[in-house]
Image 1 (cartoon, rainbow, N blue to C red):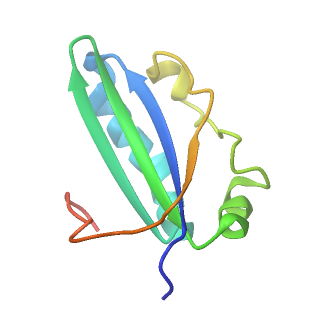
Image 2: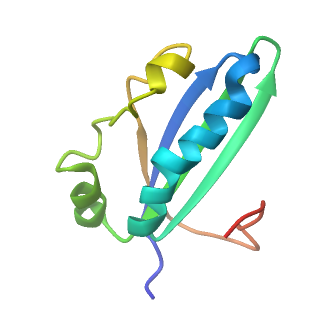
Length: 112
């Protein structure tokens, strides 16, 4: 399998009291479908005073592959049905980066 050339980064914030519920919901409704299409997916969580930030990084072979998953425009955010219930504010953008180099063990965390 070829190495990914694109990373797509999504960020969202919740209140601490709903963070665990959102994390579970986001995995089932958002991450699982992404795992089926992307070359790889990483999720991150940062617990702060007053809010919790979630970051999802998906890795893609190229822009065409990413665009086919997102329905054409990879910059467009596809909000999950229950996002308004959980997120402090809906994210307005995603970040798309060209992957230049990877060094060392870039995996980690738990799960598949």
